[in-house]
Image (spheres, rainbow, N blue to C red):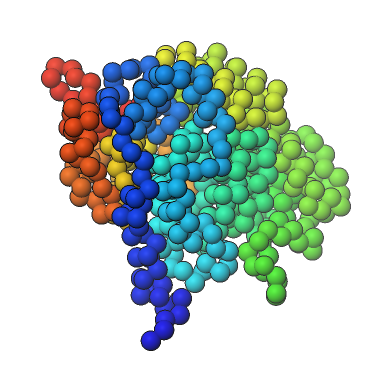
Amino acid sequence: MKLSRREAIQLGLVGTALTGCAPIARQFASEMPENVELPTKAEPVHRWVNRLSYGPTPGEISRVAAMGFAAYLNEQLNPSEDEPAQLTMQLHRLDAFRMDSHEMQELPLELVLSQLQQGTMLRAVYSPHQLRERMVEFCSDHFNIYGRKGNAAFRKGRDDLDVIRKHALGKFPDLIRASAHSPAMLGFLDNHVNVRGVANENYARELMELHTLGVHGGYTQQDVQEVARCFTGWGLEDRFLRPKGKFRFDPDRHDDGAKNVLGHRIGPDGGQSDGEAVIDILANHPSTAKFICTKLCRYFLGEAKREVLDAAIAEFQGTQGDIKLVLQKILTEETLAHSRPVQKRPYDFIVSSIRAVHAQTDGAKPLQSHLEKMGMPLFQWPMPDGYPVKVEAWTGTLLARWNFVADLVRNGIGGTVVDLEELKKRCGCRPVELVLGSKMQADRVVPSLTK
């Protein structure tokens, strides 16, 4: 009997085909270097790699040491669109990043969420463009979208590609504008029901509080109301024989009266340009520069020292929010050398561990379940502020981390394989030492929970 696509999906056949590709992926895996040094033999270089990436792969420390910090930073700030064959092959199988959001609604929600996590984790593990992946994580939290609300999961794949990844190392105003037009964001923050006469303030408030100015950025409740009026009519296509779920501005639902936002007058009859004007005002506001640069400093350095923060803010304002140039001010040899330890969140810990032991993974459910046990399933944080960065939020995950490491090095995670014998031969250590660190103090191994 011939099954329809829907019937095959319901029977779980598509899910099996999409996620069970680890054996094929291993055929395209990169070779392990002959000599695998433990990271702590080169402390400064280890710090560079740990902060700019998700941690070293075997041989990465030696490679970066040979090229020097400036060349390594330049390499990471200027990624290409090319990815390894292994990664490209696995990503091509994921409908969540390829299908139209409306067509995708025939897929089960759990499968779509799993594919979103799978693709994100695979990129983080295997992409050589590690700084871009770290910025994708930063921006995904900054513009958080809860995948279980409405149709958000079906729209998030395009948001990830067209908003987050496209602009993660670009200009911040372009990132804000892309997010403001994103069907995933408009749906998540209810702007598709924001109409004249009954303005919905959800998107307006989060746009200022979380995306641009910050909670202490100088806006008032009146500003929230005015911004909400500016974004009336910004919604989703739902007309007959039109591409469902795409961005659409509906002039019939827009409040065309005059508005005043943060002291800027926006004249009447502006239509969609009212919202565009708000984006310009917020993207170029001094509070936005301070808020974004502070978050970037804390993300990469663990703190926002005044001299580093001031330099980053000045660069942000002088370059109209050029993220790449701002990162050059934040990520220097000196700042990295003198920055405080940064605790790895669960996602960072899992990805860095897989990279450390040169594991081959399909990133599917067995691996995702470990991330869920640590409390950080991707795209499933319900609040618009993204997963927390404070150490206190993750202190309860230590047992789950140890259980993950134990399963990883004994090949107890389905779809994830470590060549234990080869690792021991080439690095002269137990694989667990690569994951947890090899810095000996009083004859004990210090767990690599920080970077």
